[in-house]
Amino acid sequence: MTFRVGRVASPLMLVALIAWCGGCRQAETVTPLSSKESASSSLFRVQTNDVVLEEGNRGHAQLLVAPQSPWKFNDAYPTKLSLQPLNDQASIALMRTSFQEKDVWVVDGNVVVDVGLLGVRLGTELVAGTFNFSLCRQEQCILREQAVSWKVRVTQGPR
Image: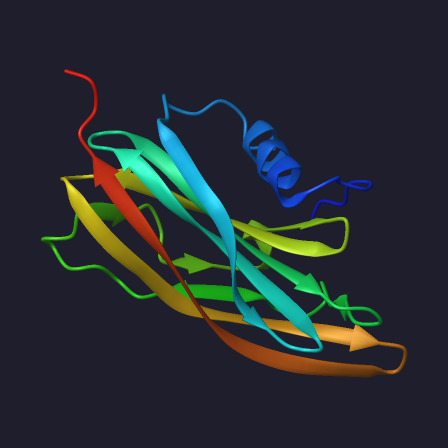
């Protein structure tokens, strides 16, 4: 299932919209750091945001894929994000490591996946994975597999 929404002013507005659309969640203390472009080509750009999360709290990070004109995201293709599992000593826990097309939001032509996190202990982790998707223009569609990654730092919350 995909959701389509009218124009969004910026990636930060997109993050706010996703948080709002996600419904009520357990208290989250997440500080997204500035978005970074982790991959770019003439076909698309990938943005992720490094996150600071307090120990014991839930939060989330977003992966955004923006097709470059004239390309458009193909929501008929089975989109998939697969994250590498973390070891038992990791400072975070991933709520899930596999995301399918039902977990993908399409907003203003951009593709967004929301990744749930839990701050387990103080430290920094690299979340890495592979995003499989399709782009189309006029009569041509192509498949892409893109490596993605971002950092999550767990800090001590107020005591």
